[in-house]
Every structure is written in C-alpha cells, then in structure tokens.
Image 1 (tube, rainbow, N blue to C red):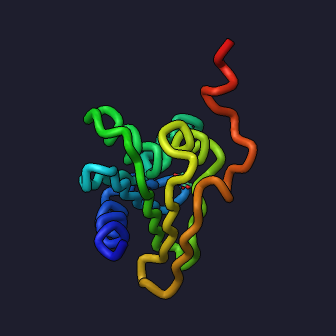
Image 2: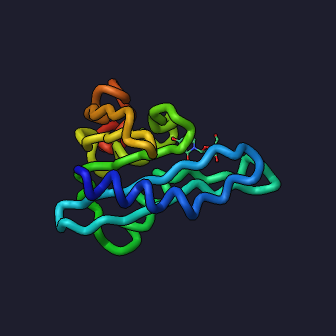
Length: 130
Ligand code: THU
C-alpha cells in the first residue's frame, strides 16, 4: 500500500491542470503485481478533461492487465480526493470490490474503502444479458 501511494504521489507531478490548479495522481495495482500510474489532463475545452484514475485504469487495461485490485488517489490539495462518479463506474467494470486508497501528498490523511461502498447498486454487464 505504501508503494502504491508513493507511485500515485509521483504521478501527481505530471498532472496537467492549468485551469483548476487541482492536481491528482493515481496508481492502479493489478493481480499481476504491476502498477500503472496516471494524472489528470485538462483541456482548454474544459469538458475534455480526463481524471487521473481513468488514465491509470485505461493504461492497465490497454496493456492487457485488467484484474484491478486497488487504486490509490493522491492530491496535493491537503484533502482526500474521492473518485468522481464516472471513475467509480469505470473501475467497477473491472472490479466492483476494488480497494480505493485515498491519501494526501503530505501523508497526513488516508482513507481506505471498498469501491462497492462508494458505488452501491451499480449498473453492470449482468444487466445487459438477455
Ligand atoms: N479530478 C481527478 O483527476 N480525479 C478525481 O477523482 C476528481 C477530479 C480532476 C479533474 C480536474 O482536472 C480537476 O481534478 C478538478 O476537477
């Protein structure tokens, strides 16, 4: 867990957030033991902004590594950053029970929860079966 948080903190340095000045770093741990990092990437066309968590998840998935076990999220804003609704849904696609680790960059605050508790009654592929 310490390593995952450290990797998310490192990723924070590459956040591109000139509009909000709100930098977020994320790190995804998969069953294989590999770690994929991400940071938020903003755009002058604001709605095109991509969150740190989804960057990290998409990196893992597009490397063929889909068994997500944990996602660490770090911000330097001094507060814990819970994943947004869109990121919760994207993580749930791969593991509704993933561990979500939130931490501040200075290490003063930390919270660990299960995604299931952040996204109850989620829409899932089971509902698409007919
Ligand atoms: N952001 C993330 O990267 N992850 C979150 O979970 C919440 C929000 C980013 C998006 C945007 O660049 C900035 O934080 C402010 O919303």
